[in-house]
Length: 156
Image 1: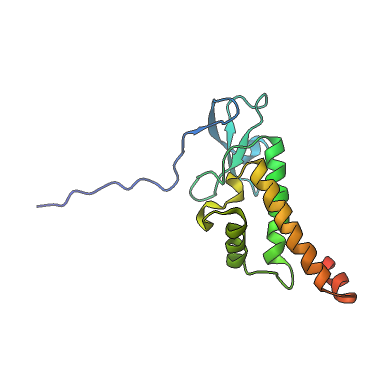
Image 2: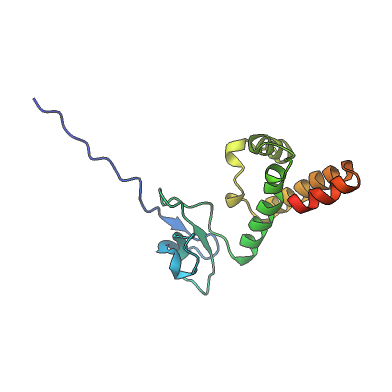
């Protein structure tokens, strides 16, 4: 007796995404729909674009969204939050390892590490990330003196 073969669903699948701003569906589009940058290969874009300018990039391999749809204001906040947060673990020398940085963020924001993805945060949470990361970076800078502080600015 032959065993039944199960067809495996492709990892590349489209998700039904609803725009949090206007309630319309978002469609998976080629990145060239909005960008000339070849790095952005796919994104979910609200069908009411450009009236509703909400979109989010999709992961290259899985086509899953990299966060929730965001309008221009929220996208800017998320980029700024990433800018300051990433300095905590990308600076030379780093303040934290990447894992420690997410642990620190979890302690500050009261969440579990798995739920602390900036791509899903709203403006208020992004503001907190920016504020807390700036505070740590400022304290770090104050703890370095003279030429070390100057070198720190160049590397972060």
